[in-house]
Length: 410
Ligand SMILES: Cc1cc2nc3c(=O)[nH]c(=O)nc-3n(C[C@H](O)[C@H](O)[C@H](O)COP(=O)(O)OP(=O)(O)OC[C@H]3O[C@@H](n4cnc5c(N)ncnc54)[C@H](O)[C@@H]3O)c2cc1C
Image (cartoon, rainbow, N blue to C red; front, side):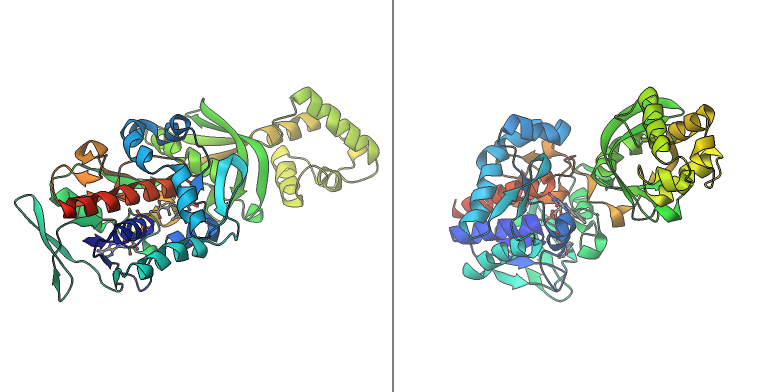
């Protein structure tokens, strides 16, 4: 069996098929396998999502969910826990059911898989780029590197999508699959930060917690979310922004999109006035810039006062109702024009890929090329961040690894 691509999905396929007894050759063009896996979850690896109700879990995979029941019945979240914990990797569940290794090290996840490859004698062909896949009579005839031709009875394609191309996923699989006649939806960056027209340099690295983010198109409200916001050197990021990016991308194709940040969603205007009055009362002889820092960072205070047209050195005892109203307005409607989504280099995944209708989802076998199995980020499955992408890799990698082996035995 040949597996092309030693990322999360390819590693799982190789581990499973070799443990069942298959003779496996694993190719990767990188010097080391699993380069993307090692940077997942900021180096901590959000390995899965501890939602054990399969209906609830799959509702996160949008329109693809109806295709996923079968592979998830074969290898679901519980199986991911068992697979890694039985091999010595202890897991913990954090906020929003995100699961991480207790060690907080993505590298430990990689090692569990890599140890399996060594244990079951997978032939490792790192530093080996596949240049060409030859097809004959709807079957893969061989695969070719710069100077070698390899053949096998079955092939698993696990070359990933297009996000973070420096990790090796440069879209080769999409090109091949298209040339084989598969319908491949054009990949676009997904789960990606947003670039803003105007970047506040002084806010770079600052994050706001539990703020309300409202996206508007041509001035009309589209949708809102409560969450955290991170200001970066190009715009805004953080899980809530990244998980809104698909919808924002759609809005951007229809008109101009603005982001409105309510920094104090728990305070309506009346209570906000009351809170400011209380604060000013306690600090009557101070300058306003030194008092508002009790509610937000100094950089944010400077920006809000500037936008409100109030001098930072104004004594709080002369702040009028009008001035307070301006401050409140800016705090509850800090507006940004969205320029674009950031590119593949900043995306967690790429949307698009092979239509699931062209794959036998019980086995992950291509319906067009009989000896080909397709896994991981090559599949057209939209999903948010939260461990859902890696779970998809474990599930499809397992199912393909097992069924490619069973096909060999027939
Ligand atoms: C920064 C970042 C953080 C992430 N964090 C998380 C997270 O915490 N939780 C989560 O669920 N998901 C996360 N993801 C998404 C997750 O990492 C991916 O969905 C997953 O790794 C995809 O695995 P894959 O095996 O399909 O592809 P990849 O991991 O991209 O592997 C593809 C492999 O194929 C090789 N390859 C490509 N072309 C060729 C060729 N021609 N010849 C030989 N080899 C080739 C590449 O070198 C690469 O090693 C994150 C993604 C990024 C970018």
